[in-house]
Length: 355
Image (cartoon, rainbow, N blue to C red):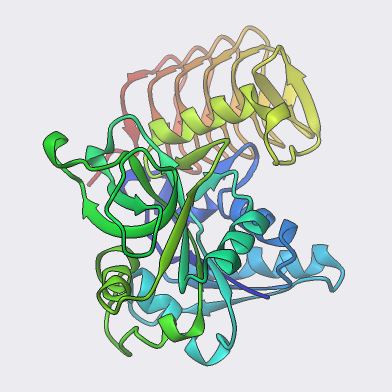
């Protein structure tokens, strides 16, 4: 079966981390975000994956090639680079000649506990042309909500967590919200739906293609997933995803890299050296934390160096960042290769600052 991962986004809200990498290559627990949906696809028996790329696609191509090397022939993975941004559906539409049967399409910039085998079974049982994974939220006003019915042509019942899709609405006001389940960014799609995507035109799944499927009267089904779901489009979400994954690790279908736990909610990946103190943080490989330094509720990507007496709190450091002796970072996001000079102190800063 074919799986397609959409990975063309720039991730502007994650800058400066995405100045040097595409959004799906931002790391959570020591590995790129895109690996989470890839792992869910492989676990479901998908043996071919095509990644649609755009911004800094060469990094994704190199990473996707590493999947082939690690799979010993059980997975065929490749990329399809967009010459110009085509939107979510438009990027998949470029692959229409390769989509000859049911396929699975997922977003490469979210962390979620998808049970794709279960979704595939629901897709077959329901007779749907599209089946969508959903996630339940407390406040749906920031998302696109989905209205479900127990029958193909029934009324929306806001209490349902699975059923036939009858309605969509983007970012509803509180009085307009007919449900609190949202599109989680993973779809099972039949080839005839792909044929509805116009060629050489920017086209979106949620705003254009799926409403068109409903207009045609084709059945669409959806089921709410359990576990976790994060769209890591903002630094705060990245840290929240890390915190949740560490706390709920035993209950989630994700593998951790080789390394060691620090307490119940911190992790040091193999190859890092920690002589200072770390709390509720992830320290990636090749990092060094010197004596009397302190790292709390933070994420340090590969190759970071934290000098003696430095303090890092609620912050994200990109690859190869140097925080020199006595420096202090609180609620900061630091891009790859930056140096924080000895004794400097920053609070709620993006480094380098936006132009």
